[in-house]
Amino acid sequence: MTKLEVLKKYFGYDSFREGQEELIDAILSGRDALGIMPTGAGKSICYQVPAMMLDGVAVVISPLISLMKDQVGALNQAGIPACYFNSSLSQHEYFEALELAKAGQYKIIYVAPERLEIDSFSRIAEECEISFVAVDEAHCVSQWGQDFRPSYLKIHRFIGGLPKRPVVGAFTATATKRVRDDIITDLKLTNPKTLVTGFDRPNLYFETRQSLPSRAGFILDYVKAHPNSSGIIYCISRSKVEKLCSTLCDNGISATRYHAGLSQEERRHNQDAFIYGDKLVMVATNAFGMGIDKSDVRFVIHNGMPKSLEAYYQEVGRAGRDGLKSDCILLYAASDVRTNRFLINQNDNPELSQSEKDKIKDKELERLKLMTFYATTTDCLRDYILKYFGEPGCGRCSNCSNCLSEYEEIDVTAVARKLVACVAVTGQKCGQMILLDFVRGVPGEKLKMLHLNDKKGFGCLKDVKPEKLREILDHLLRTGYLKTGEFYKLELTERSHDILSETVILKVTKEQEKRKERTRRRDRKAASVTATENPDLFELLRQKRSELARAEKMPPYIIFSDKTLHDMATEQPLNENEFMRLSGVGSRKCEKYSSEFLAVIRKFVLSK
Image (cartoon, rainbow, N blue to C red; front, top):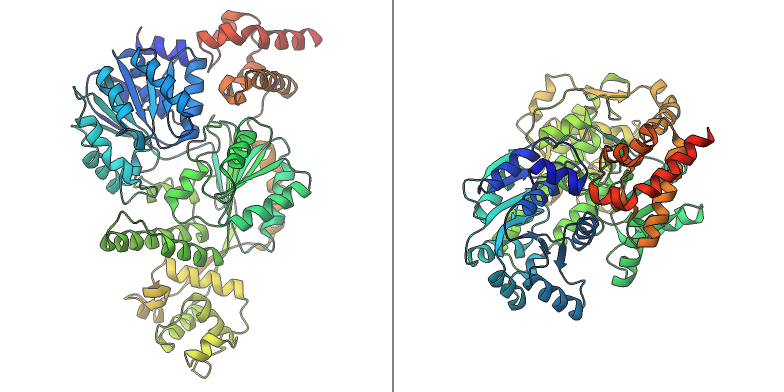
């Protein structure tokens, strides 16, 4: 079969997406490959199609147990023999899979990196012809990546120990230039075909919110406004997960929870409830989500700011994997910065030297600063993300909260000069909260300990609202008039003195724009899910999919994605030939499911 025939037969697509064909061609020609493609862009196709066309077995190295289960399940559904080796298997299941692998029963084998050096798996490598190795989540090999895993550094030893070196492909969604260089070096890729297709996800709407009176209240209102939508809500701590999940459940929301404090059995049960659609909303720490391939997540809300834009973009990447419109909302408060600094300081990897730990900590603090700038900027959010990852900005995307808001410019020079002057007066000894207490004239133990209560400038900005002071201070940090130094103390910069001769302008949301907010959110509610010409038929098809999924004990999206159901509802195929032309319908799925869904469509058409 040709690559296009493989694509249609097993995966149901008539053409490749951007970048897929170039990487597949490189692998099929025997050349190593490095693909940097955004979540939802179809990275798995780049190694699954070559795996079907090359002789021998393809090994996919992944750290994500849930992703392995999902992809192996989907491959077997499509008629591709595949298995996985990870800690979720019982001893009996593990050795049974080993025997089948040795007998050549599988075309694709997924394995966790920690398993590569186990003797039993090494014997598979010796007895099977491994023609291709794909390294998923390849950024984990870099100490500068947000998910560094020491086990990834041993992958090159496994590849080097094979009787014949296979073609190697490495794939990830988020990688800066430095991380890309580390992937090539540490995996020892040979003259790889390197392709960066871009980081933009046009179907995602980005929004940031600051200083809300009640973040839980905002989340509850949002979820109630999207009653049939599946979503993930990330919280910084376990206690916040517990509290928010209880609030949602008490208000009739179909929600569950996930964090490291739960037993392994409860985490598995709750994750399955979300994936299988028994629960619509998952409230979780960042322990949840790696490898979750659920395609119909319509919103991701961060109830607190993550440590880095890499982590944030990876987490919001779980929304809209089917290409339909989805919302990504970040709720920010100044306390998030302090919490993340604490978490960064607590991180202690015993496998690293002190020098390496210090370098990584400094890098994480720098990333935290840039994440804070994202949370507080009034410029286009998509433009900020693209530039962060080294791409040309988009200027104005018209699909983020900043682009859709109306701003006015306010001269804040007088307040800004006083803030900078007070950093100097206090001897650059204060963090942000202490400085704000100082300029507002709020007495406290820390100010007393630093002997600042009687310093000139104490209370000089007591008439300015605290939230306005915070906005201006954030602006001074973003624009380089101030910086944070050791122990997060505010320090002067080379630009600090320029403030005496420059005008400081702050963009703020117009008051009338704030009053329009509810109306705009109602409009976005209608646009947050791609409309279909026949919503009633779509709902009937979704019910049929859920019925089949329960019977087969698999996630509904593995049968068909929401996008394919939307196509069914719009195109209304009435026979198998028409059904096969739908996006996402391969020959195996057509044979297995067409009669069930065609019956629903025919009944709907006849009732009209």
